[in-house]
Image (cartoon, rainbow, N blue to C red; front, side, top):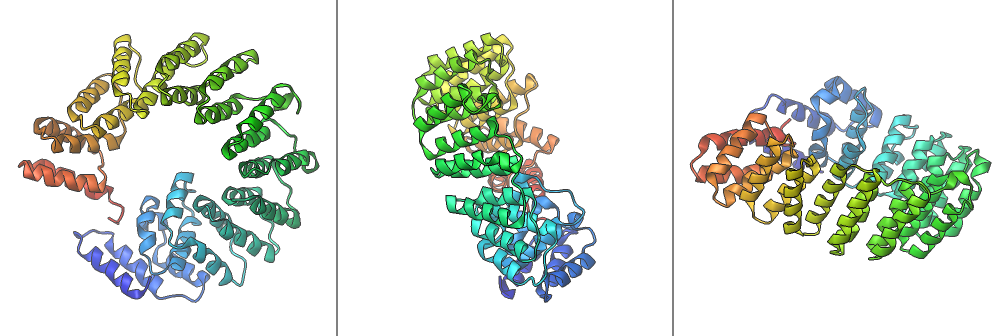
Amino acid sequence: MPPRASLLFLRRLSTRPPHRDHPKVAALLGVLNSAPSSSTSLSHALSRAFPSPSDAFPLHRLPHLLPLLPSPLLSLRFLLWHLTSSSPRPSQHALSSLAASLPDLSSSVPLLLSSSPRPLPLPHYALLLNISAHAGLFPASLAVLRHMRSFGLVPGAACFHHALRAAGSAGDVSAVLEIMSGSGACPTVPVIVAAVHKLASVGDFEVAYRLIDKMPEFGCVPNAVVYTAVLDGMCSFGNVDAALRLMEAMEGSEFGANCAPTVVTYTCLVKCLCGKGRVAEALAVLDRMAERGVMPNRVFMRTLVEGFCTEQRVVEAYDVVERVIGDGSVSSTQCYNVLLVSLWKVGMEEEAEGLAQRMMKKGVQLTPLAGSSMVRELCGRKRSLDACYWLGLMEENGVLCDSDVYGSLLLGLCEDGHIHEASTLGRKVVDRGILIEVSCADRLVKLLKQYGDEELASHILRLRRRSEGLSF
C-alpha cells in the first residue's frame, strides 16, 4: 500500500471519536513507514515502540488492521513479529482469520523469503506454513520448505503436515515427501495420514496404498486412522464403490485387527452415501456397526439424520432416532436436538416447531445450538414475534442462545414494527452487555431513532463501538 493509503488510514482514524489507543496505531504506521532495511531491524524497531505487542494490538483486532498497513510484505512482517513474541499461540480459527486478512500472500511470502539472506527463526517458518495451509497456497508452502532446506534446516513433522494440508495434487504431495526424504526427516503417522488423504482425494489410490505399505519402513504401524483417511479421500473424489470395497476389506480384517473400522470410518461412509442420495444404504450401515459392536455417536447421528431429512424422509429420520435411543448409545436429548436442527436446515419449519413443542412438553432440553438455529431460522422467515416467543421460552428453561441471535432478532422486531417487544429485548441486550455486529447495530440505531427511542439507540451504539475491530 503506498504512503498515500497510510495517510488515508490515519485520516479515517482521525474522524472517529477520540480513543486512548489511537496513538498506538499512528505510532505503528510511523515505524512501518520508516522502512527498515531488514526484517531484523524492523523487529527491533517494533519491539522498542511496543514492548507488549498483545496489549498494544490484541489478536482479535489484527484481521481488521493487517490489510490497511503500508504494504503486503510489511503486513506479513508485522504479523510474524507479533505472533512470535511471548503471547499465547493463536487458535486455528484465529490463524484462519489472519490468513484471510493478509493481502497478497502468494507474493508476500516468497518476497519475504527472497529478502532474507539468513535463516528465519524456526517459529517463523512454522507460522508461515500454518498460514499458507489456511490460505490454501501450496506454492508458498513449498517455498518455505525449500528455504529451510537451503540453510540445512530440518523441518519438524508439524511443518510437513501444514504443507500437506495446502497440497492440491498428487504432485504436490510427492514434492513434500521428496523434501522430507532429502532432509532426513522420518514421516510420522499424522503426516502419512495427511498424505494418503490428499492422494485419495485426487484419485491416486495406488500411490496412497503404496505409501501405507511403506509405513513399517518408517517405524509406523498402519491402523484404522490411515485407512479411514483413504476411505474419506475416496468419498471426496466421488468413488463410492471404491469406498465400499475398502470398508468391506477393513471389516474382513484384511489389513489386520487394528485396522477395523471405527465410528469415524462409518461416519465418513454415511456422509458419502447420503450425499449421493443413497440413504437406504446409509441406514444399513447401522446394522453393520451393530454386528461389530461399534456404537454410533452424536456426529454419526447428525450425519445420518440430516441425510434423511434432506431427502424429505422424515418418518424414517424419526425411526433412526428412536432406534439409537433404544440402543442407549446416544441420549434422547442429543438425538432429538440433532433432529430438530436437521429439520430447520432443510426448511421443514412446521415439523421442526412441532418437535420443539413436544420436546418442551416432555422435558427434553433444547441445546444452545438447536435453540439458536431455531431463532435464526424464524428471523430469516420474518417471523420475529414467534422467534421472540421461543427465545423467551428457552431462557425460562435455562437455554442461552448465541450472542448474534439477539442482534438479529432485535433488528427483525424493529423492522416489523414490534416496538414494545424490541424495547424489552433491547434492554435485556444492554443489561447483559451483548455485543452486536457493526452493520446490524447501525441499522438498529437508525430504526430506534425513527421510533423515538434515543436512549436505547445510544446504548446500542456503545455496544456497536465496542465490537468494532478498528477501535484500537
